[in-house]
Length: 225
Image (tube, rainbow, N blue to C red; front, side, top):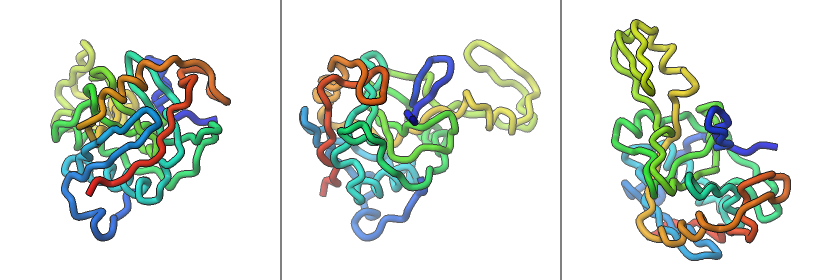
């Protein structure tokens, strides 16, 4: 049973980038409408800062992968996550995972702040496929950590700890420093996100916790012309 997300110290359980033909590839920062049974959410996708991740997400949109999926993991003081399970709590098949591009996105200014959209994944940083989450609070601890120049890195600080003369590759591949790739932001419909955030949760199907007790269905995700 897979539940994409981080399963480390904070106990979080949080694709092949495809060139998109025609109009799908023409807009620098395309927008999509997430139609749910609680209302619509509009998201601007940051293709200029996370191009591979946006291309991957749009391919799933084009394939109608998200139609009939649910928000299956909701934590009121953290995030709402969906895009992987259908209404029977069956995980949908996906394409191959994408390479993590969170550090480049972070360097370009994208952070896990309230209202931003990021890719969910397993403990493997290069495992993101279709699942995504919307931050409902600022989650700075999910941001990818930028590694200073140098090899070895002469000085590195992380959460109050200081290390010196560390091989650069050791820091680049440290599992706690990858973070989560932000690729979009909610531009309309945060009231709907708040409804999702505040829904009562419990067990659902094979999922033991954090599942909305009244299903919150993604009826469709469509590109806004």
